[in-house]
Length: 212
Image 1 (spheres, rainbow, N blue to C red):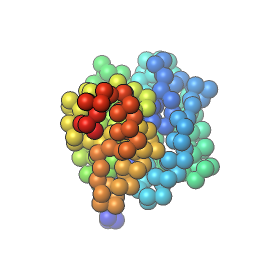
Image 2 (cartoon, rainbow, N blue to C red):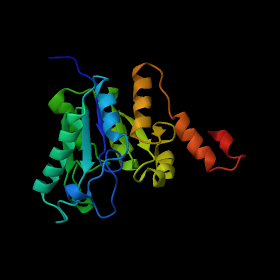
Image 3 (cartoon, rainbow, N blue to C red):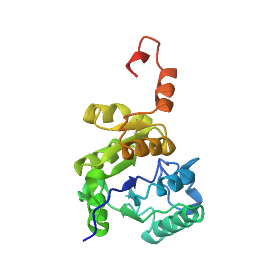
Image 4 (tube, one colour):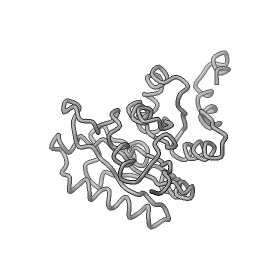
């Protein structure tokens, strides 16, 4: 059996594309976040496989068909591939909260499925997302979580720090997260970036900013 490798897991909405309070239900509603495609190309160069793991309850809520969701992902992958990036596979959970499945984040089912199908060492992996549920899914299997401030991230900072403390990293966006991933791979683990520190200092009183 070939040696296991780490992987990079990306949430979709709020990480790759702009989030929507009413769900992204068609390709017309899908909008890439600035620099997301370029960053995926950059992460591809690390040699680690990249997976998208996304909660898509709009399917079981009757707001979107699986066929439409697959069309969105097919178009997304085609554009990313055309610019030199590679996403190995997209995993999605169609279930709503009340269905109590094992794949809807914060449950780690999608990560576990990828690990089984692609011989992934989850403890050498990264989970990048904009919600505490993303970080929790990664933490449940030993992956390093990186919380972004795009999408819902700014509203998930307090909850994430309360739940996980310093046992995660935080970044401005997926481009910023790529820096953290590469630093970890180089043996120089970091919990945040200068971009994020500067952004937070701008919103803090001078006597509060020292904590960053």
